[in-house]
Length: 474
Image (tube, rainbow, N blue to C red):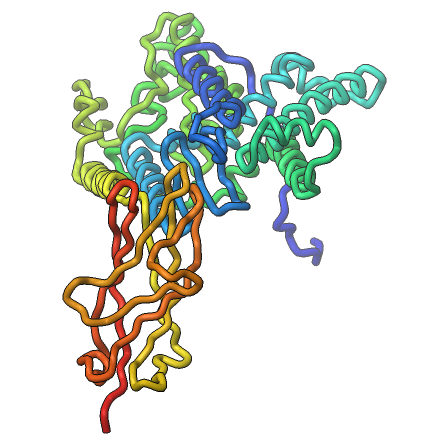
């Protein structure tokens, strides 16, 4: 007996997935190529927006508070578009999880994509599963050091490319690339690349499944999104059990289709046995399906012992009946509700995007003081107006009040109400609105009014409602 408390920490046991080929492995290769291609190449796509504007198709311009996405330009006050996209992304994740399990985790999650790439490099340098296990268990010698250093060097190059590609989204990519190579870039660029290089190198090379199990919250949330009708990777135990080696004997006729070869375990990047049932660690990558189908074909058994299936079909399959069509599992109340909500938000955002004006303004009344009584008895209110010109050329804007008001407007620093604003920029302008002595607004507590701005070149108009504070008579 020992009085030492049990340790709550379990050291990581390295996982060495075996190479596998099949439908889902090819699908994962294809998705990897597409996603990595989008990530690395997008900052280099050019998009002509006119003079004095960036020509990078996708750009998060923090210095000028803009987000450019091809022909779309998002301003700071339009952040609701970004919020809407994040909400749609969350609902999309809920939708796909409720319909098809953790397909995001298994195919398109950055951690999965880069881990697959790192394992590919590892397998290319050190060999397949058995060779990597032998190398891991071998004592350090010149060969092991050479292979490990070579592998880590390639990982490091991939990690540096990952961090380097990320910073290109925040400034002009060709210019930043030249500055990085000439050591003249901003220190924050080098710092960001260093941080992303380190995290990619460690997460993809050494932590791998630990990121999915311990750091990512989604495995713990997914249970709320899934139900027995969710199509996910599962083992048909009613067909495979009792498992055992199919040798020629009397007992072999009593065995299920599973020959207990552990091929499904050997290819799993999470190191789990899908035959143990649904597990939090499973990322639904379906590599175990490819491995099992290959074995079933070799032993002359039907494919699909491990497959994408819905657990609600188990009673029918046990009774020898065919499962329900896939569409009946996908189109159910939960997925329809997610789809409707996702679509409603998307339509609303498209509507807001198409009706927004190329000119805009915000009005902020000066509150200290709320009004000023001048020597002739007139009452003046002061406002700060922020005008936005979203066009690619300078325009002259004219400020005015509604025709129904008897108030006068004056622009600070200008004898007229015309203001020139540079292309794709904002201007903060102070204006004065005055009520003459005897005017109703001069003696009322608050008067509602509307401030208009007109683009003199195109005739486009925009307006904002505000208030005029008057002097209440004793």
